[in-house]
Length: 299
Image (cartoon, rainbow, N blue to C red; front, side, top):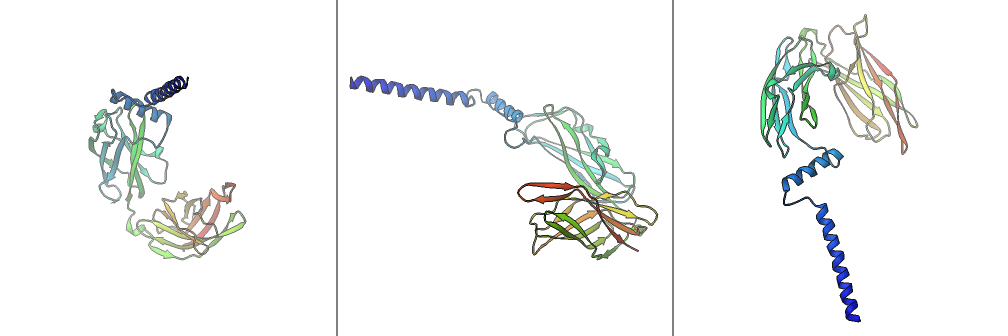
């Protein structure tokens, strides 16, 4: 009787092991048809959005120079590389988008790149091209980037860089001022001080250096624009081209914001802060629209 029980137990154990092996084999990709198995797994991962987004292409568009005079033609070098495991079909004729940095990209001019359209790229294959943009002579900071690259199952865009169209040198205000102007901005337990420490103006940019006097550790969240006045009217607000903030140290966060150059006819700068973030610790972040303004006379 004891031997019979042992045999039954062993048979039951073998049965469980076989079931387990069968489940593992069913859940693993086929090794016999590795191409189809890997393709199926890859497409499922893309559809269901698991893990990091797949990288199909490396692409760039770079101007020949960083600075241009007004009216110069701007030449671009373009490259696209397939970094995916399979061949990729570019189904459309891509364009590059060019325009002033401060405006939305849907307002940019388009230049079609016919030589890279309707192409098939093998894995690790690259194609290069060039393009010319005949700029309209308006000075300031410009952005160039790819419009949609249609791969059939997805569209890619971006890969941009910047260049500068120079103002006439005799029209540019070149000076540094230290206004020391202060306004109060709300925070969770009262107010903090926003201090305009210094403004540097040169042929390439206007840079506003500022401090936040606060005990908050994290950098502040807000939008900043610069409004110029020529004594007769306020010009259109210019959003900042990029900014920086330090970590808080000894109750101060240092920061800067960059804008286009300021011309000699400007008599006043106005710094405008909007969409100010008030952090309620452990609860939420409140966005207050504003605006808050600081007027800086230049003459």
